Image (cartoon, rainbow, N blue to C red; front, side, top):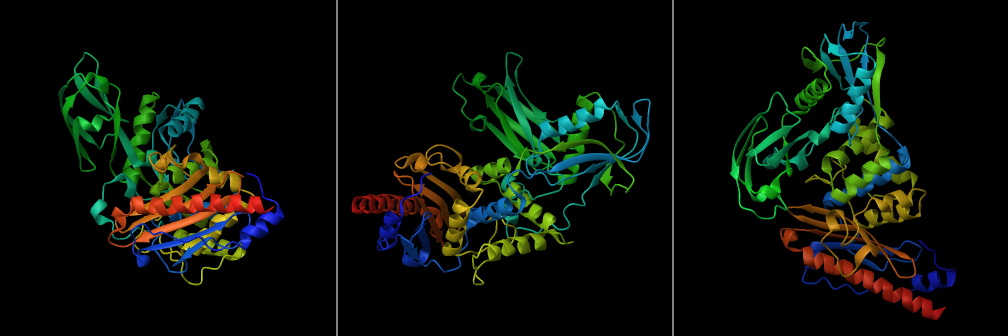
Length: 463
């Protein structure tokens, strides 16, 4: 993105703040802050120093701190260790799965890890599979979401997070009858189905035609399945982390022709254990794109804990908060006591930030060495992620992280003017009317973007 010439910057720096139309929102319901990335005074500042709940825009602070402290090429390692001998293709003792806290570790990665074990000549596990969870000392929490228990967005982080702790229901209607299969076939999950062939119509979403009941261990599927739904999938959040990881391991190991283990439990690998197989994740920048574009709470919380792990300390969650605050201080961004952290993802009733602090983080990110990775992780208006169906009138020059809770609607990110200059924008609604404020919030952001365009055109004319 191009930088402006100094005369234009000076002209813009002297420009008055843009008048804010709140589009029906009450003044005490919204906090706004906007400033040019390339320099100059804020163009908008309304309740910018008032602590507000940022919802998922808090992920921006976590991602920014992670890029600065870990680097965009940081990778997570998952390993299989053992001190037992191998005899005749059998591991004669326990296998330790050292979880790395990889937020993107999925079944494809687990299959690759297990295939490496098979390549070593091991086909039988005579001992236990022991989950070594040492990398996270404390995962923290997300209080007051008990009513959402069982939903995928509240799945907590874990050292052995596998496939985001969801299994897939794959539906078939191919002349052999309507049916469904669980992928992977987890031993501790009972699947029952009552499906019949449905009408010949389009199937954009199989959940239009089926009902899925799930209590974490029993999944029941009923409905009428059109032929067009053949091959369609839907996910279910099942089991606890340890049970899911262990049963997923066993299912995929069996699919590779392996046998065992005897059982799954927790255990720490002995110091003399040797590495039998390992997997390295995609770089942090790839995970950050998933986190921000699709607002994944579980992955964001895992990234937050990774900050703590690398910072050191027995309490990983406390160390993560300390690391983020230290990064703010190091970059000269003052939180004036307004910042409150719970898990770094915005899945929180307690987290607080000011629009100004959020905006200053955006400015620092856009001016820093990892600006490309940070900005590329944000949803593109009318194109992808959580902005795919928003801001059609502004299009890809707008990149913003969204945030939503019962009493919160938020947007934070960047607008790029026609001449390449950028405006950092933060707009956060808190209050009982927040869920109804989407159109008004979008209109406030659109006004700021168009107003910045006007100011840049004026400054260009004055050169």
